[in-house]
Image (cartoon, rainbow over all chains, first blue to last red; front, side, top):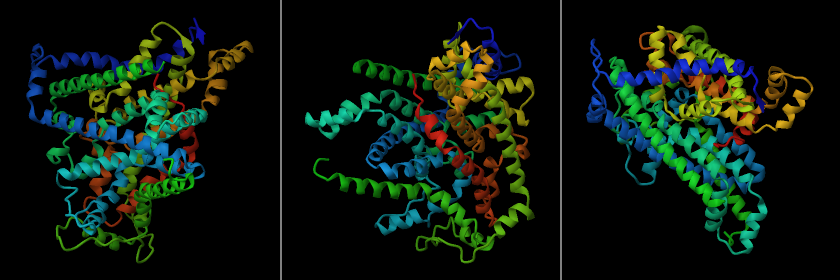
Length: 284
Length: 287
């Protein structure tokens, strides 16, 4: 660790300047926008924008959808990748191949992959074919509210591998004798999972959850590709709202919406962080 | 769990995993196969999409009726539209990666191996920015870009991405975990902070640097929100990731070759940096 070195400025300043110019300073400065009315006199209106925004049905729709999608996607991804990682621990020689296969979708461009998804989920496509073969009704995946299902599946497809490898490395760091001991004591599978595995990998599990959630908030691309800027009401995300307002040059609403959403995001992560702290303290 | 023999359990896990690997690979493999169909066949095939005739299904095609390279011939030589946007994409990726290479490792080094007042505050801000989704950070970005008059130029997409907070975080976490003895030894040998950085820290960080390059490239190759918001009037500057679906909305018969072409660099980057990603990401924890 270097202390009292002037050269730190050389390393720090270029990046810090960019952060200040593009993120920190305008972030603080933008608060002003959300508190004025945007007319040419630009009067101070207090929290009026926030109140208006909260009354706006499109904003609430976008916010609700983004929240719902992230509340579905993030926990689902977390649980699935944990189960898969636990399963992979048993399969030594094959694990490497699967691990690298699972990671691949994370790097694939969504726009190019979409063609295949469009074919798969078409009204006459293979997925519906399988449904009919199983004796169920066909679903209009791409045109109705059912679009959420392909969106969630695409999200899982893309992000599973990344979460999986973080879990795997955490699981591999748990000493084997711990399980043998628990086994001798007569601890069952569930007991082992909840009392040994999860507490020991809390930091990684927390990281996976946060990453999953960050990415779930960003769900927009696939909806935009399939359904455009004004999709079905059940998949109209917050990003759609922001883009459409921005297109109308309504800076007041855009900034207000951004800060409102930012506050909500911080609140969620603060709660998560607090829970992780408590879990970590409970362990020691 | 006690009842089944380990061997049977092994087999079951293997079967489930093989099936899953197949599903995961499916979109990529299908894109590759379909890119060798002839344009006429693809046009006919994609034309059967979107029919709501409840009695008919689309055909399931697993191989071309005739192997053909004419899709590739078409997009690479006859009609350069896709190629032009592909070049845009490549330009964005190159510029963003270059900017990140200049800024982010140095910043991570400063935040991990130095002690100075305000360091933890800066790192806290980086984490906060990392947690914020694009819907929120686009506002400060737009305000600055508008003030500087950079909206509707390629810089609008490039500059904010060059300090992507996630990669500062990723590199910083890796550098913090490096053993201090290594740098102390270098210091005793008379190396300054810069030489420690270039000759000790950077080489040791090879895996995480590789991981960052690969993940960041994937981000650049997948740009959608940024061009859509910052380049509203300059659609000619869009990267292929944004326009690809507009170009192929009405099947031209060559879309799968376009998709394959666009996937290829990502696939190469992935194969090249695969080991680095696995190693670099594994050691990261949120502390």
